Image (cartoon, rainbow, N blue to C red):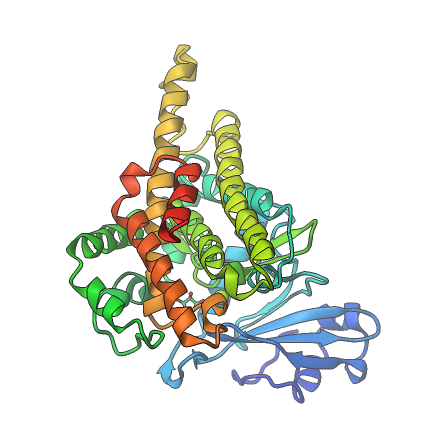
Length: 419
Ligand code: SR1
Ligand code: MG
């Protein structure tokens, strides 16, 4: 039974009393008198509680009526919990086992109850701590191929696709946040922008960098107008949890229809940024270099696995609106189908590089930064590392048509570091 009272934010003390009669929590956890609750949310928007008992544990995530990162001066609707729930159902069906199990959605309280992923850690933190996560690239590559292909017109029938597009078109508030915070603010003098002391010249330089601003606008146009598939919409390394053997994708409230390259590019951008920050987080130069090599290899594996799995789905599941078997395979022209596949993958790759370059700028010059850089106490050192990442990000965005392979991008990382 759903709680009848109007929306109120939970806190650790009230949660057992407020959710203590929900069978979805009672069955795995036992009576609420035995629950232990802690708030662990470290994202920019929501409350996240871990609820444990001697019998088990669950996660309760609740939307706040404002953006947590800024406070009550930035009001937000609670609708994102609905979109996250709808998105996680679809993403979980398209790549089974890759998102947390969902136990309960309460629209009035804007909350989701999910499987507590344990002993998983947030990938960003694991990478900063030097954990190896040997299957991360493979798992996220598979996840990206399966969710992006199966959520697209290559896979879905027309009625399902159109209804879904209409549903997620309602996630306007979060789409608008991405449009402004990612694609516009970093390239102008926006009130929410912030940067490390010492980056004043770099922040000013982007505003007069015509080639970069044209790239930012082109990528914004792709993001806003190319409703190609259902995206996660915020797939950075803080939205992925992992162990050595398992990888899960969380936090899908930014889900919307957009170009495939967006999810791919955001994820790669965060692996590459972690690489630029590595010297600050790993004790000595050899271990930092090993961590850097692992991050670059992870990015390459992610793309290679993505491309291979996408090709497999293209050959075996291309039954949606765009199908196209009638144009090629059915006429005995498998080569034509392979050529069309190569074109599709080339578009995703170019877009991914463009989005990655823009994402790097917004994480250094915009509102929402990343822990890899933010936790570097020596601001001079932080600014120096961020400057290199910015040069690399600019290269990706502006020269995305000239970078053909992940190996070429790896060379560009090394070049930006002056190696
Ligand atoms: C106000 S929200 C800021 C950022 O946090 C989220 O994780 C998204 O990345 C968004 O851009
Ligand atoms: Mg998030």
